Image (cartoon, rainbow, N blue to C red; front, side, top):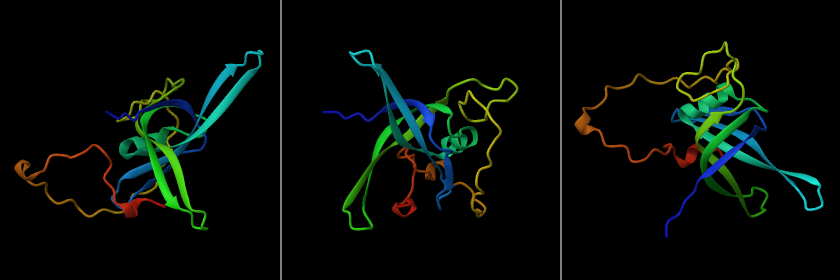
Length: 167
């Protein structure tokens, strides 16, 4: 039996993205997304329910979302569900949280016709750039090993250690 973990959402940011860099220099942006559903009851009453979803983007996507998104902006995301578990510090037992890891996204809405599209992204909406937090200083890079000495990439997943996780 095969498994499948894919989420497609379109909604509004509930807060400005929070960008930070892990010790490994990997960019991480966390933001909230409000997704609503509207319907009419059999009695003709209009109803709406809103679901609030925590989202995480990595790497260049994290930097682009931080630069061009802010609270209230509409975004379309595709990703996967992730379950986080931890022990409550006040002795309340195990805690759980499901969030979405963003794998791709598109900005939704009108674009400023005078603004240039962002480099390296698929944005369709622009606004003045919010500066990214400064990256920690890096040592000069060593020359790359010859191609035959390089191992093929194992995964497209972000590479980070347990101590990089903030909880």
